[in-house]
Amino acid sequence: MVKLTTQTSEKNSLRLNNDDIDPNAFHIVKTLQRHGFTTYLVGGCVRDLLLNRHPKDFDIATFASPREVRRFINHSFIIGKRFRLVLVKRGETQYEVSTFRRDQGPADTQEELPDGDNLFGSPEEDARRRDFTINAFFYDPIKHELIDYAEGLPDLQHGVVRMIGDPDIRLLEDPIRILRGIRLAHMIRFSLDSKLREAMQRHAASLQGAALPRKREEILKFLRLDNPALPLLTSLDLGVLDYVSPQLAALLRDIPKVEVFLNYLFSFHDKKLNTPAELFAGLVVPYYLTLHGGQISPQLRAHDILNDEKLVRLMSNELGMFKSEQTLIAKAMHLMALFARKKEFANRGDRRRRA
Image (cartoon, rainbow, N blue to C red; front, side):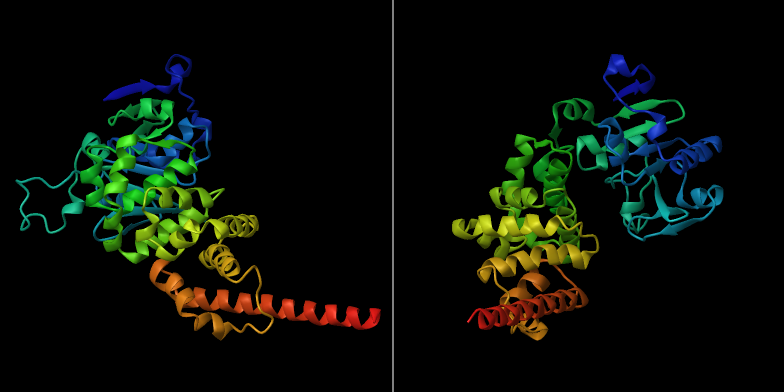
């Protein structure tokens, strides 16, 4: 374990300023500490603060049980069954407060522990359960202390995404970590540790058995990145994309078409897409255009899209899109066809006038 004070930032090359911390998250930590519970900011928010990035979310870990958090923090609600945690609401923003957890051991019987994921433990045990070393930091904003149980600081300084523990074991425990690792590397522009890359290649096929809704969420997170083409290409390079979306993998291997597809992907992504339907449209429409020579037929109807077996297989079986999202995209493409038809009529009129 490494424990550093961020008040000596020059000495430790750390850049973590409490002014960058969400005041509501700071207050939750302070309140739980005041009631005697060791409490930290944890995970990605600490990593992002150290990288001088603005954290999207501020997560909190504590010795307090969910009921104790609920008791001392107002506007809080216990959620989940497999992973019980507390959701704290402050206006439009939510904060997750989890109790330190540990892995189930041989002395823990099923009779005593009907839900092994809710075994409470120490901060160090909690850190060891996390996925990547740079996601396992704990930060005490009251004492200005950074705690690094997983030796993530060297990886942070060298720009490396490394798995905590044996990557072969950890990826088989949860194959979705393959996609999470690829996304994380591109999100913060780090490289994948060589052992992790090799393990990803070895266990890519395990993603076939991963739940489609979880794969869907990771694909959406790919699409929210500044350049979604990069995680897709890395997934292809590692042999991962074949087990997530075989049709996208085949397209990206088609040399004459891949550049066309990536250009469409970039142009659609530039529209600042936000909702899941919009994000998926920014992938599906470029896919369709690439396969159809960059053209949407003026006669295209929404039902043509929804009856396109290949396209529906991509949307339903590979991307995990909801029927409502598929319908929205089909209607949007029908509107594109109407515009194409209007343009075609206008061009005919121009030709007649010139004649």
